[in-house]
Length: 97
Image (cartoon, rainbow, N blue to C red; front, side, top):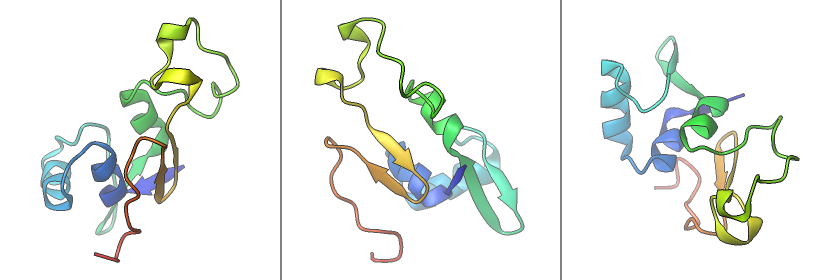
């Protein structure tokens, strides 16, 4: 599963232009795939970089209460082209700027 570079940029707190610049230089925080003129970022790489469980680990309980990313046992989750978390602001879909 992959997502676009703009979505990945928002996850890492980067502007779109900085993300494209980093991707061109091979310095984006995670591996970026290039298909023609399009960049795609593997969701698993984002989850790994953020120390979040991937789809295979989501049903395993945390090792201890201190292992949670967000208090109360709640985690952010990522789906292609959407970022969902009760802690992140509601960002408009790409193209609605």
